[in-house]
Image (cartoon, rainbow, N blue to C red; front, side, top):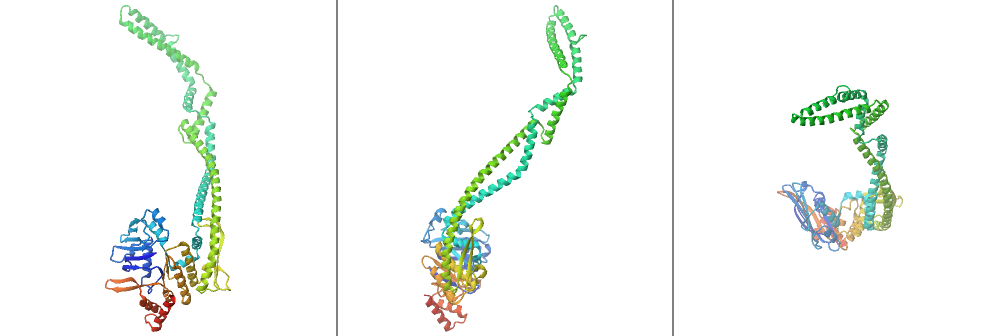
Length: 555
């Protein structure tokens, strides 16, 4: 629970040091005195959003520090998980904010993140402000209330894990199906393309060979004629290169008998003659083998037309590239088959996850139903003494149309304050004062279920007065019994009189400006404060006596 609060340079607070007591404390002061400023500082200390504009004018930083007693609240795991020193008797939270907008947070003098500070803060103090009464009509608050009172955190954790697994699998399955459906038309087209390529039965290197053969067939007669003439010139019946070469060899051989160097020329000429004869024979054989074949030429041209058409269609430059493209298509088609297998496997996993989700959802719903029955009885019992004698309160739990992060339940708090009025949704029929009383009762149950160290009520008494306000104060005082601290910010003397400790917030002016401060009142100061709440600035003897009576009755 909160033991000390130190604030410096925050809005209108230059410097504030206050010790808080155990039990039920009240905090009073005129409207605008600075109560909301102190709450704002507390929110910042508990991990709330920082704003450099809250630093007092003329200063470059503000510091808010709180000292807490944690004995008996089982918060050791938080410190162990976050590697922080644990001090049960004096845990220190500190928040520093600079005019440059930088914020630093500390737990027991160890720097921490804002998220860590906020996590611990939520386990130390619950601040109930007036606007939170509006949350009473929301399903999220009502479900959270049931879950807190049901103490079903482990059940909800199991459900949430199952829900996240199921939603993750469902999302993946939907994406895979959508992708598969989007690809189906493309896959048909790819298969059509593959069939066109494969039916051609292409061979790597075939195009070059066909192009050469086409060239040969197209000019067969000319080639045959040229080769024949070449053969005739080399080794024909008339005077030819071969016959002339023989004559040259004979002459050189004859000369070698008398001229030694001619022998080398003879040998060289004989080598040339062998090569010439081979060329002539090859040319002759080639011209004899070549013939004009119109049928073959038509086949070759049609085959080349098919190849050129496929290359143009698929924007490829060769048969090798076409075959590579066909392999790519086959891989994609095989991947589509694998994708269908993945879909089938994912459907099985999703079905199994859904069964687990149904099981954990039933357990969560059952825990909420049990809690709802208990809450109905306790709320009705608490509201009757608070001035609603004919109250009827019930919690309607129905199956939600789909599984949500919060569970599979729709909840609605039903309420009636009058015998003749049927029960309707609480937020639709309850007055502001009735909502405040219902919220106080719920907070009482929540505080008991959570073992929360400190609960702060910011004017929860709105819309009530007199004996009802006194009973609300009694309930808050009852909440503060045991190991819990309750602080009520109030404008009602009936509530202020029941406080075991009384603090007053006030403004004062000096040459440097206006400043807010807080002080703990002694018995006589308390009497005068409560009398002033009843009669205004002029304190009559009757008001003072009434204040003393209220305080005495509160004790």
